[in-house]
Image (cartoon, rainbow, N blue to C red; front, side):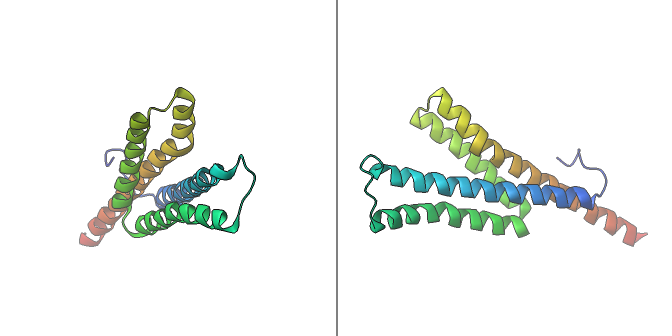
Length: 145
């Protein structure tokens, strides 16, 4: 990644960070919606939702939201670590699909909606971190002169 970045560009850093964080937030919202929908579909055929069913579905949706908040906070301070977490999560997601034996339609929709944005977010975080490193090295070199 450092071969691609040779000059300091604060615009590139800011744009990469903004896009990566937006993808993290959107991905977390998608996971939360999917968790809520998955746990609430058990009563879908009956059309009888009770307050406890909605609360249980909401509690299932809170877990992905908390993970999203943790990854977002991690991305604010430790971009390389956050990128590693996001990329490992994308790989784990693909392994889960292999183990679960998803069919082609599920694979395409899951990869486009969830895994691809996670990979793009990880790559953008790595790009921002390497550009930040280049900026630090340029500043240190300028101060040493």
